[in-house]
Image 1 (cartoon, rainbow, N blue to C red):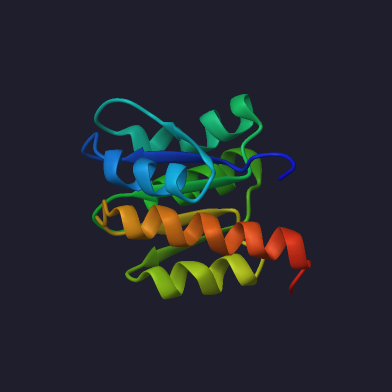
Image 2: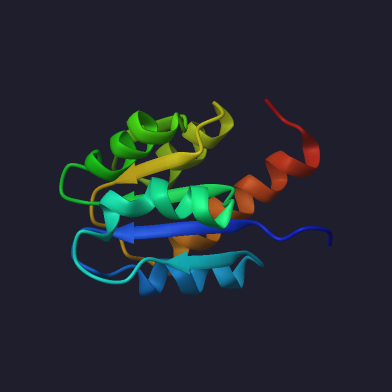
Length: 124
């Protein structure tokens, strides 16, 4: 199936395990940043791991995504509150998605599947 999609996951409270399971279920490689304030390291881990996507979780849904943009120039969208909003951001070319707290398998699976479809189809 070609190269696998690497998805960095950083959660302000040190969670993200369910999202990581969803990324795996979709055929992606989850890179779960351990520890509290992991959301602030999403850009660092994306750069180091040459990852395709980053998902950041915190109360506002913005801090880690904005840090990745400021530090490394990754296109981001933040303040996301639904999986559909995340998929729309991907379709607009965003690589770092900042969500409120949503540690669900469905989010990890659907975001990864959507990105794989975009890569395959070259959809805009």
